[in-house]
Amino acid sequence: MNIQIINGPNLNLLGTREKSIYGDASFETYLASLKERFPDVNISYYQSNVEGEIINKLHEVGFSFDGIVLNAAGYTHTSVALADAIAAINTPVVEVHISNVHKREAFRHHSYISANCKGIIVGFGLDGYRLGIESLIG
Ligand code: DQA
Image 1 (cartoon, protein in one colour):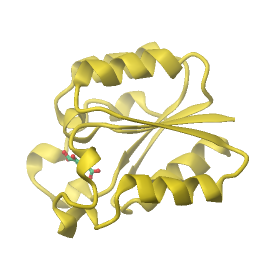
Image 2 (tube, helix red, strand yellow; image 1 turned 120 degrees about the horizontal axis):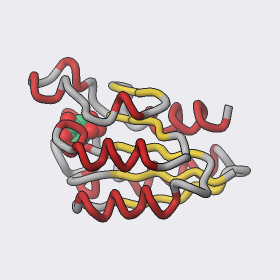
Image 3 (cartoon, protein in one colour; image 1 turned 45 degrees about the vertical axis):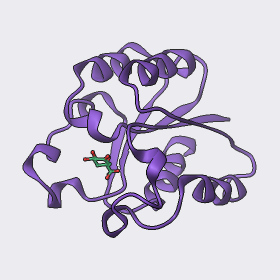
Image 4 (cartoon, protein in one colour; image 1 turned 90 degrees about the vertical axis):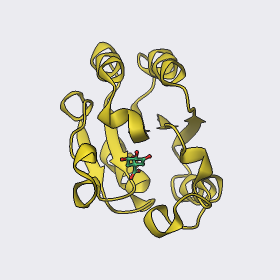
């Protein structure tokens, strides 16, 4: 079972970025615990601050992997191209947000990608990635 986690812009700064919203754990530390939790799942991780690179990664894994957990971060609220990429691939994508975007600014309430995703996990902190994997491996 191959699962790809993709984090979008500014999520490389988890652990130092706006800690009151996103917590103080780095993603690398959390990823190690995820891999321990799912020893039978091959979990790959990719982070990019560049929209086109995220699209390229979706194309790369989206016809062979079993699932994708995607936190598109700010591009969630802006990117038609990302929505199109998710629609174009075969692998199911679960949209994850660490914070509850619906409690935040109005511009975070709309997602261009949700309609093309298998489901959405919002507001459970980093645990959302675990929930995303659970939902993909059934
Ligand atoms: C986020 C929410 C987005 O609105 C924001 O732009 C992010 C992170 C989240 O995980 O809560 O960068 O996707």
